[in-house]
Length: 90
Image 1 (cartoon, rainbow, N blue to C red):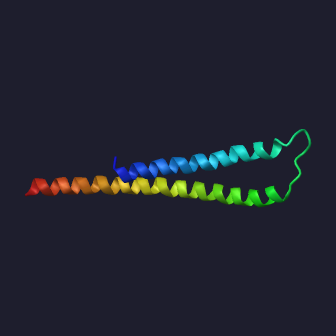
Image 2 (spheres, rainbow, N blue to C red):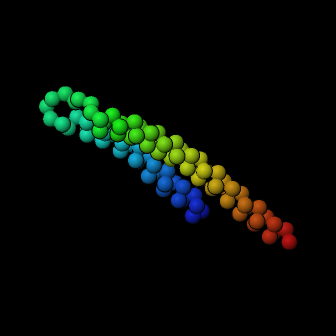
Image 3 (tube, one colour):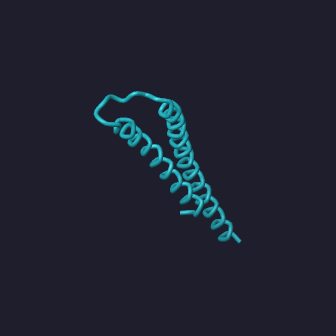
């Protein structure tokens, strides 16, 4: 596998773990305030939309990186086949 393909896959996995971490840890954070029900405040009112944007961006970037890795792998394997075929012809 090409070095660039591996980097794309690694960063895609990192993006997916960040998004999953936000999905799992944010509810734990907002409900850990004790026995009383959670009351929204300014901190959570600002943080919730930012975390939602970060989660959506991480999932989108991760998906794009997986797609890029597939295309890069296909192109490099195709280029190596073409290069190998031209060396056999000469």
